[in-house]
Image (cartoon, rainbow, N blue to C red; front, side, top):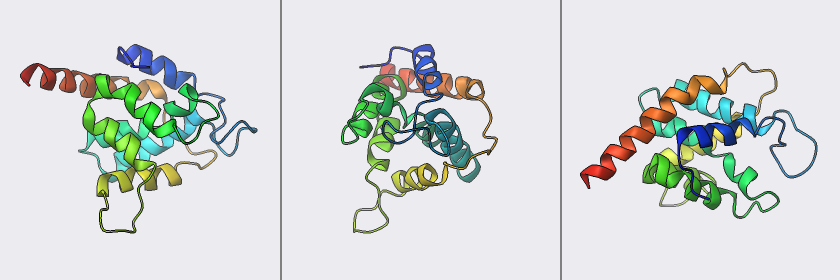
Length: 152
Protein backbone atom coordinates (compact mmCIF):
# COMPACT_ATOMS: atom_id res chain seq x y z
CA UNK A 1 0.00 0.00 0.00
CA UNK A 2 1.28 3.43 -0.92
CA UNK A 3 -0.30 6.37 0.87
CA UNK A 4 -1.57 9.04 -1.51
CA UNK A 5 -1.91 11.97 0.86
CA UNK A 6 -1.81 13.36 4.36
CA UNK A 7 -5.55 12.78 4.85
CA UNK A 8 -5.17 9.08 4.09
CA UNK A 9 -2.25 8.90 6.54
CA UNK A 10 -4.26 10.74 9.20
CA UNK A 11 -7.14 8.28 8.72
CA UNK A 12 -4.75 5.38 9.19
CA UNK A 13 -3.27 6.94 12.32
CA UNK A 14 -6.77 7.56 13.71
CA UNK A 15 -7.52 3.87 13.08
CA UNK A 16 -4.72 3.02 15.53
CA UNK A 17 -6.96 4.12 18.41
CA UNK A 18 -7.86 1.05 20.46
CA UNK A 19 -5.50 -1.21 18.50
CA UNK A 20 -3.24 -3.26 20.77
CA UNK A 21 0.37 -2.20 20.56
CA UNK A 22 1.69 -5.75 20.56
CA UNK A 23 0.03 -8.66 18.84
CA UNK A 24 -3.60 -9.50 19.03
CA UNK A 25 -3.90 -9.51 22.81
CA UNK A 26 -5.66 -6.97 24.96
CA UNK A 27 -4.56 -3.37 24.77
CA UNK A 28 -1.45 -3.05 26.93
CA UNK A 29 -0.43 0.06 28.80
CA UNK A 30 -1.18 2.17 25.70
CA UNK A 31 -2.76 1.52 22.31
CA UNK A 32 -0.99 2.17 18.99
CA UNK A 33 -2.53 5.63 18.76
CA UNK A 34 -1.13 6.78 22.12
CA UNK A 35 2.15 4.99 21.44
CA UNK A 36 2.59 6.91 18.16
CA UNK A 37 1.80 10.23 19.85
CA UNK A 38 4.15 9.56 22.76
CA UNK A 39 7.00 8.47 20.48
CA UNK A 40 6.63 11.57 18.31
CA UNK A 41 6.35 13.87 21.35
CA UNK A 42 9.54 12.44 22.85
CA UNK A 43 11.34 13.06 19.56
CA UNK A 44 9.95 16.59 19.35
CA UNK A 45 11.39 17.32 22.80
CA UNK A 46 14.78 15.75 22.16
CA UNK A 47 15.27 16.91 18.55
CA UNK A 48 12.96 19.92 17.95
CA UNK A 49 14.62 20.92 14.67
CA UNK A 50 14.43 17.47 13.04
CA UNK A 51 10.90 17.32 11.68
CA UNK A 52 11.45 14.15 9.62
CA UNK A 53 12.67 12.31 12.71
CA UNK A 54 9.54 13.34 14.62
CA UNK A 55 7.29 12.28 11.75
CA UNK A 56 9.06 8.91 11.55
CA UNK A 57 8.28 8.40 15.24
CA UNK A 58 4.63 9.22 14.62
CA UNK A 59 4.09 6.95 11.61
CA UNK A 60 6.23 3.97 12.59
CA UNK A 61 3.18 2.17 13.99
CA UNK A 62 1.14 1.92 10.80
CA UNK A 63 2.78 -1.31 9.68
CA UNK A 64 0.99 -3.07 12.53
CA UNK A 65 -2.34 -2.06 11.02
CA UNK A 66 -1.34 -2.78 7.43
CA UNK A 67 0.14 -6.23 8.18
CA UNK A 68 -1.61 -7.49 11.31
CA UNK A 69 -0.12 -10.59 12.82
CA UNK A 70 3.12 -10.38 10.86
CA UNK A 71 5.70 -8.63 13.09
CA UNK A 72 8.56 -9.48 10.75
CA UNK A 73 7.03 -7.29 8.04
CA UNK A 74 5.70 -4.31 10.07
CA UNK A 75 8.72 -2.03 9.58
CA UNK A 76 9.08 -2.73 5.87
CA UNK A 77 5.35 -2.35 5.20
CA UNK A 78 5.22 0.96 7.09
CA UNK A 79 8.34 2.28 5.33
CA UNK A 80 7.00 1.32 1.92
CA UNK A 81 3.65 2.96 2.68
CA UNK A 82 5.14 6.36 3.60
CA UNK A 83 8.09 6.57 1.18
CA UNK A 84 6.22 8.22 -1.71
CA UNK A 85 4.45 10.70 0.57
CA UNK A 86 7.09 11.55 3.18
CA UNK A 87 10.38 10.72 1.47
CA UNK A 88 13.25 8.30 1.65
CA UNK A 89 14.69 9.53 4.95
CA UNK A 90 11.42 9.11 6.86
CA UNK A 91 10.94 5.67 5.27
CA UNK A 92 14.51 4.65 6.15
CA UNK A 93 14.08 5.80 9.76
CA UNK A 94 10.79 3.92 10.08
CA UNK A 95 12.38 0.75 8.74
CA UNK A 96 15.79 0.96 10.39
CA UNK A 97 14.50 1.96 13.83
CA UNK A 98 12.96 -1.49 14.16
CA UNK A 99 16.44 -3.01 13.96
CA UNK A 100 18.57 -0.26 15.50
CA UNK A 101 20.86 -1.18 18.31
CA UNK A 102 23.65 0.63 20.11
CA UNK A 103 25.93 -2.33 19.50
CA UNK A 104 27.95 -2.97 16.37
CA UNK A 105 30.13 -0.90 14.10
CA UNK A 106 27.37 0.57 11.92
CA UNK A 107 25.11 2.42 14.31
CA UNK A 108 22.65 4.78 12.61
CA UNK A 109 22.29 7.40 15.35
CA UNK A 110 18.98 8.77 14.04
CA UNK A 111 17.39 5.33 13.73
CA UNK A 112 18.62 4.52 17.23
CA UNK A 113 17.05 7.76 18.51
CA UNK A 114 13.70 6.73 17.01
CA UNK A 115 14.08 3.25 18.51
CA UNK A 116 14.79 4.67 21.97
CA UNK A 117 11.75 6.96 21.77
CA UNK A 118 9.71 3.96 20.55
CA UNK A 119 10.72 1.99 23.62
CA UNK A 120 10.04 4.90 25.98
CA UNK A 121 6.69 5.85 24.43
CA UNK A 122 4.55 3.36 26.30
CA UNK A 123 3.56 5.16 29.49
CA UNK A 124 -0.10 5.08 30.53
CA UNK A 125 -1.67 8.43 31.31
CA UNK A 126 0.95 10.61 29.62
CA UNK A 127 -0.60 13.55 27.79
CA UNK A 128 1.16 13.50 24.42
CA UNK A 129 -1.34 15.79 22.74
CA UNK A 130 -3.73 14.87 19.98
CA UNK A 131 -3.16 13.57 16.49
CA UNK A 132 -4.58 16.73 14.94
CA UNK A 133 -1.56 18.61 16.34
CA UNK A 134 0.60 16.72 13.83
CA UNK A 135 -1.44 17.40 10.67
CA UNK A 136 0.48 20.59 9.77
CA UNK A 137 3.88 18.99 10.27
CA UNK A 138 2.89 15.95 8.19
CA UNK A 139 1.77 18.34 5.46
CA UNK A 140 5.03 20.30 5.62
CA UNK A 141 7.19 17.18 5.38
CA UNK A 142 5.06 15.86 2.51
CA UNK A 143 5.28 19.20 0.71
CA UNK A 144 9.05 19.40 1.22
CA UNK A 145 9.44 15.89 -0.18
CA UNK A 146 7.20 16.79 -3.13
CA UNK A 147 9.30 19.87 -3.94
CA UNK A 148 12.53 17.88 -3.70
CA UNK A 149 11.08 15.37 -6.15
CA UNK A 150 10.40 18.15 -8.64
CA UNK A 151 13.98 19.39 -8.33
CA UNK A 152 15.52 15.97 -9.03
